Amino acid sequence: MEAFSETNLVRLCGRIAGRPLYSHSSRGRDFHTLPLAVRRLSGAEDRLNLILRPEQLRSAVLGEEERLLVTGELRSFNSHRAEGPRLVLTVFVRDLRFSDEEEQNLVRLRGALCREPRLRRTPLGREITDLMLAVNRSYGKADYLPCICWGALARQAALWTTGQRLRLEGRLQSREYLKITDSGPEKRTAFEVSAMEIEEDRPDTTFVEALDWGR
Image (cartoon, rainbow, N blue to C red; front, side, top):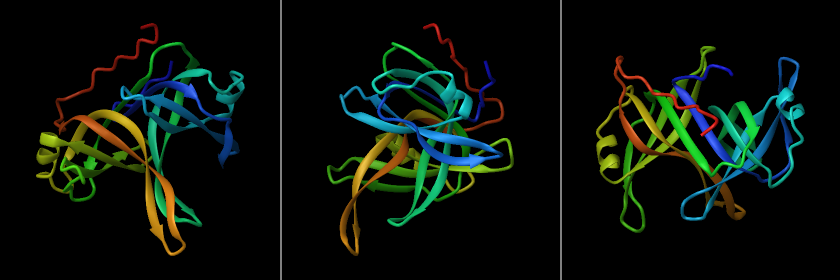
């Protein structure tokens, strides 16, 4: 099994919600996207995009409604399609297998704030803070990952400043919204990490990895 990054870890278990589609080519290899639907406790589903390497596609016949357990890293890129630029999050899969386990959605990140936090209230009056976390890759690049936190955690996060190093644990979620454009409202999908725990990152703190596939 591969060693997983301590700064960027995603573990998901859900059902395949579509067929693989070509994503991009890099260093002579083709990569594909695969939608994975992960159910929340409320019954709603997050539809999350996996990035698969060629050998991962060949390793199994992927059929809709099959359940996958995957571990990987959260990646971001700017999409410049006709509807305008937007930030898209995907999960770069390091390991996958078929599984009958229950839904899982775990994200662990360590990085630095690259934008001032923004505290706001929802229409229902709940406090929420928007964060943008820069997480380094091993090749000198970085992923810019939108995160949110709620309530007391939101008030705490609103006090931090750009450059603050953080570690967080949460879940990756998708959210549909209406974007008002010149041609009228358009339905779009945003992806973000909803933080359940977040704190300042100190040199002596480490994540405890729990990657026991047999649980």
